[in-house]
Length: 248
Ligand SMILES: NC(=O)c1ccc[n+]([C@@H]2O[C@H](COP(=O)([O-])OP(=O)(O)OC[C@H]3O[C@@H](n4cnc5c(N)ncnc54)[C@H](O)[C@@H]3O)[C@@H](O)[C@H]2O)c1
Image 1 (cartoon, rainbow, N blue to C red):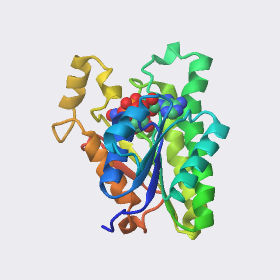
Image 2 (tube, helix red, strand yellow):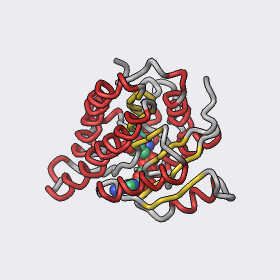
Image 3 (cartoon, rainbow, N blue to C red):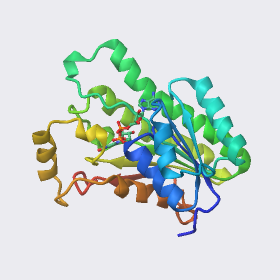
């Protein structure tokens, strides 16, 4: 796999969990990384990654706000001279019964999880199209493939939307050397999963054909592959990271 030295990545929702693990893995491969998150904790995550601070930049960003998204992205471009890899990872996971989802909660989950990914693809896609190179990686979920009541119908619908949005941007950007792909994880050990009751987590583990939960590094390794030159022929694809739980 070609080294990612001197590439620049922009990761949303990078304060913790998969976003932080993906940022860490890309950094280890030689990338400069803009870590962004709605939470100020993103500054601590970035400091832990690169105490010197020359190859990372931490920015507070709410992906629901398109203007803020555009200026944050422009900041990363100005700081590092361009963005080669966009990781649309930020999401709200809200375990809610189908019958209890309110209009406000529906709108907010879709605004973060789907509209935010659309903004990320639009802003990064335009930049990458002009440079005629780039990688966009969107985080979907097994919930977007199978439907999950556990994580909420709004969450599942948003993750299903990401699958088709990825194909649309992939078709549009393919002639410009820009690939757009989706990762579809299941049951990865992050703070989002840890919020479930321990007996529920154990029940999930028992249903995993590979006999274990996923680790953030399992997903990060796939992101590194999709970001690499070796994945130049892969676009519009969904890479399943679910321990065999869903095979298609
Ligand atoms: N952990 C899993 O098992 C799993 C499974 C399938 C898919 N995923 C997907 O992977 C991604 C990361 O999941 P995770 O488990 O690390 O989740 P997490 O909840 O641990 O982290 C999500 C991050 O997104 C940030 N965020 C939330 N709202 C935001 C907003 N409006 N703007 C910017 N940042 C915001 C949070 O502050 C947090 O740092 C998500 O897209 C999730 O749907 C995770």
